[in-house]
Length: 154
Image 1 (cartoon, rainbow, N blue to C red):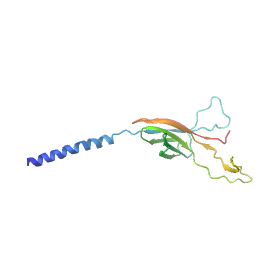
Image 2: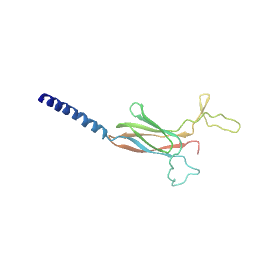
Image 3: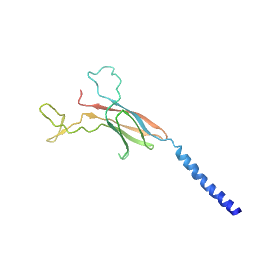
Image 4: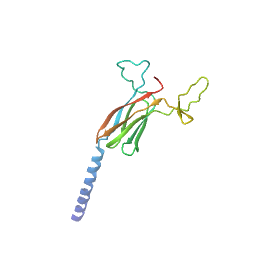
């Protein structure tokens, strides 16, 4: 009987650290990047001082790549201009990537933006994203603002 009691007590003690570790991992505060994508296109004639940039309302993908090797560790498509991605602590390049436009087929009524490369004509996308390098700290979300702008509007 005494031997059974010692065995049960030993098993209970062995399980105690595992339970404490499990609770420790459940209370872990996440880290990552969060922020807003703004529309950096100047609407009409630019003003001085410029009005505040509106939040970008189109589709855009937020990508988070390690700064050291460029490996993408997180990516999410958004449409409301706000993002929050969980990543481990480290140094990252965070980018706003607008969707690629479908190929433009010029007609007598449609003029496509064109960039010359060698002798071939390549379609130049008008929407441009932005990349910023950020440092993510343990248990914290790093705040940042990114832009998407239309380079075909001058």
